[in-house]
Image 1 (tube, rainbow, N blue to C red):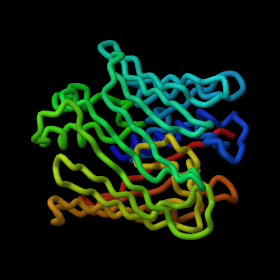
Image 2 (image 1 turned 30 degrees about the vertical axis):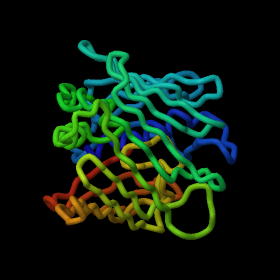
Image 3 (image 1 turned 120 degrees about the vertical axis):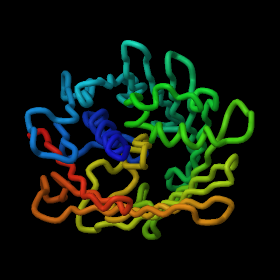
Length: 300
């Protein structure tokens, strides 16, 4: 599901690329707009995995994914994204986004107009950086998550539907709602508005489980999706530089039960401009050690 999380960042960039930027806005004006993305293979350039469709003034109208889904963007008067919709023949997914002072404070995920997940953000008063995230899930829905294999919107913008289904099935309580708390730590340094994330700790009290993500970065290349604070899946918009390594440790009752390491390679001359936004990169997981290539085409 990592590829869908990566797409979220792209979507958020393009959705707001036509807006002006002010210091306290979560509006990001990218140097380059993305046009198409290919995952894992360059053998079929005529059929990209992701295509971005623009309207008047270069505004992102929708994203076509795998020729099977179309994410349609709605906007507020201040040009922030109000909702993202995936309408399928048998169900409709919607993510509604709300703001305080143009800073994202909540995302609500609905299926057929029923709330199934809420995400609430707590910020540092001085830097406005997000420091804590509270997730609330509709337990009954995720236990029998019939959409988990095809919920494109969820997998793109909110995370891994399979993972949510798996852990909620193991929750022993009969509560209607279950929770996850995430604590976000940034790299030390100057007090910029946004910095590279050094660690994310996820706490699942119903399972006595903790998942710890730690990150190291390629300080010579730049993340083209940086500054997208509602790029929630994998926190893709929260770091200036590109991730070189992510280490994921799972602890249950304080004992390590799983460890996975993801590595990324941006080497070569495949950059779009002096900011070194990558045209392609390679991702490898320690679970299988198979390199996976992602190719990006930017709008000229």
